[in-house]
Length: 386
Image (tube, rainbow, N blue to C red; front, side, top):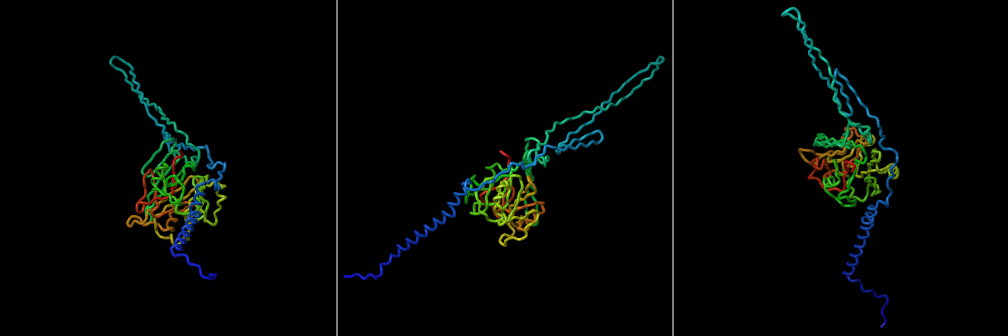
């Protein structure tokens, strides 16, 4: 019997077809996961595969050894001021009494009593340490301690290298926590990753991250770990070089810039000593001019966290509570930008907000986060140089 060569082949059983589809789909998903998550992550975790910042050798602080003194003399007291510390010259008086008797005839005589007042000046001398002009201490000798003393109050911190004062301010229907910051060195301005690790979806309570890194003052960062993009440079180390949106850059000399993504020159920033980046956005104030156009999705009133720049060594962290009726509603992006303008900032940048918005001071949560806050992937903080 001759077989018909054109006879149709027996079809593959339906269960086998379904199994093949499942295997093919799984292969596609594994391939996507590898090339879009695993492989990029492995590259990011190896900074040696990415360009790194070049730190210029010029002095970033403009250190000056000169110290100004003012002496004011009023009457018999002189006060010398040196960085707010006073040395007073006091004047005391001694009284000397001289008695003499001159005899005359019997039973008579003249008794003379003379009193002489002699001014004796006693000088109380206090040996004052000279202000340390290193770093930005030459600009603000009165901001930092003259020795290793650390003075902490419920809303302030003062040491040889760090000065912080936190103001709680009612702004409209919101409560803002405004931390005015002076640092002697740029190394006092730091960043840290949750659990001490860089990577996606690694999160930790902001207070825990701050405590583990001995932060004096900390705010939540840009939550880089929920995205695959965004330029990430922390403490001079680049972990990710994929642009995303507006970028805030802190440089080795303490200057801060904010730029839109399409105008940001990463190579130039690296050559200029790029120290930290913030990749959340949007920028709020650029070169003293507030931004007024924002995406519709971010215009509503919400809890906010932001960073502002005055000049090298002088910065501000701001956290605004929100979504709490009767206490604080939160700010719109326009209102948040205006707050930084009112503070006098040259540049300002918006960080992760909402439930993430949190400020930590001296080991405790300083604001009242919405629903108690949430774990995030990073912080920016002020700390002593270890």
